[in-house]
Length: 635
Image 1 (cartoon, rainbow, N blue to C red):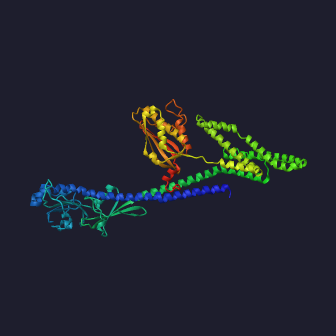
Image 2 (cartoon, one colour):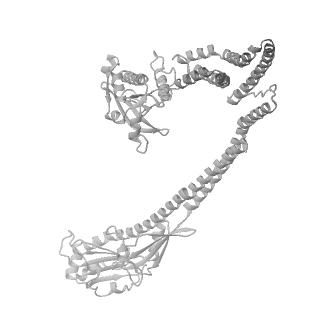
């Protein structure tokens, strides 16, 4: 299978895998969150209905308290004077209270006064037990363990469920002993439920309670909460139905309520998921098409030309044709080097033919030297080729580039150009080295002891550079001691114990010393410039991960003037400085050095005048890595 088809299959497989993953996330993570939100909303809607019914009870309570805690009612319950009824309980009294029942009982349950009316407050109503001359002695309305206790709830009647509040009859100062019980009730009928539905803006339906529920299921938060079962949710295609059953004062099921919440949230979620999947699929197809096209134009076509050319040279031995790929990237460099290599091979072949001719003449003239010539001639040719290759190396230019790169005053633009030059020169050197290695290998096959010397030398030259384990607390203290006396007087350097706890880092001690010194000097200058009398910089640390590598995160926080927002994104640029007299290379050099050490340097700043916070991330040493990574092999 060709490289083109392999890359196409990899790209298509990647996008199919990405699409499958996104489809799974959308349908099994995102969409269920919409359903959960919808069920939560349905439960809240039913809770609003419960609260609306509870408010109806709360509205009755003040009226009951006004009538029950009144000297006139207290005397009536004790003396049963008719004037009280004639003056206070005339027709219209219940309408003013918006109540359908007002009963006064003595403590034994005997009805002293009772009046029940229909919903129009005009026609009398027969409410069965509540309209009888006496209540049973164990009736919940008569249960008042304390002198100011209340009975709140619902009682079933022949007309409709009745919301009732009952209180002991006391004096106007709420003093006893109690002389009786005063109860006021209001129908929880269709009109009341319709009013609740309008207040809450919900679709509310009421049913008679069909089955008896366990009393342990009844929930009651406070005295004005009607006992009810936990909210039960049922989902249909169009709605989420919330169900509860209300209990009466006897703890028996009385009224079943259902609130239908349209499934608009799920519908919207499905629409969002569909549009998201559609947009992702369209974007994926577009990106995949563009990616394949760009890969074909920028990589696959040039690679195909190189492959075809290499096969042609290997099959025919024709070194005259050229690729001539006009590109400035690595493939263009490879094509030019390939053409240059074939040119050199052509020249070398010509020289070999000439040399072979001269060797033949020498063999005829000198028989003994024939064998020597055959042995020396390939070596001579290869050494000559190596010499020409080495002469072609731009050594002087590379030396100049290295000198400029080593110079700290070299600008970043010049460094970028030099880096590009070094990259191209490095590519050429790699090809030259490969060709030279072939030549040297042929020579070393004939000169055994030279090959061994070169192999040993090559092995010794491959030794790895040893990195130093550095204690950052010690580095900070050393840098603080080397500050100018004026800076030491203006600022106290506090090393938090977390710096010792985080462990050592792997880096160059001299480079870290310079980085920390730059940070302390900048902090001291900011503190001096802002006029802070008690300057301080606190150095703390923690262990984190940077690109899956364990690092020490050091924080340098001062209480100086801080970094203004417009300067924050430029402070690490070469030449940038707010002090005027400096070159502005300290933080730029520090950031580049931190990156070269495998870390990072960046800054934060709050409001002007609140100080600056510099972050320095450095690779942890092996010991520190094992401490923070319990599954690592260092343990």
